[in-house]
Amino acid sequence: MKLKAIDHVTLIVSDLQKSRDFYRDKLGLDEVSRPDFDFPGLWFQAGNTQVHLTLTSQESGAAGLGHRGNSIPSRGHHFAFRVDDCFAEAKQLQSQGIEIAQGPKQRPDGAVQVYFNDPDGHLIELVSD
Image (cartoon, rainbow, N blue to C red; front, side, top):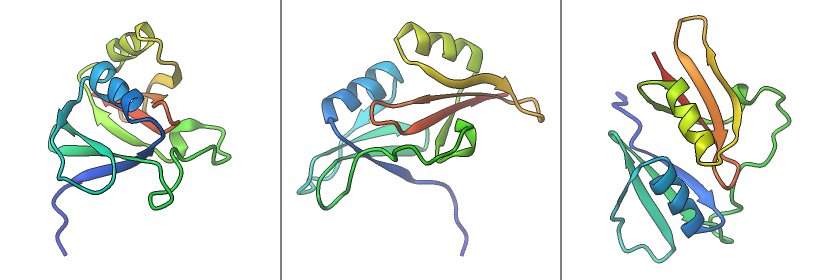
């Protein structure tokens, strides 16, 4: 097996419009068309990877991951987007009313990380060199 890249990440969300406002309008992801599935959802493009949002239902399960008992956000379940400057992006997030869960902080290898949550509590990391 030779894995080439992550094609997409799927998140279960409770409100498609609220999530569209967050991912498209606040984070700046491009909304892209999705196949005509028989269940509601949205797709967004982030570089070469897509973020698929599926509305909560009996088939898809509950939205978000819920609190998993970890005391340090960065050690729990999350996904990350690469950006040019985490410090600048953290200020932009805060100016939009998005609370920072952790960071910005520098890793031992010099990269900078910042963490925040989407409307359903999915933890998102931004990372820059």
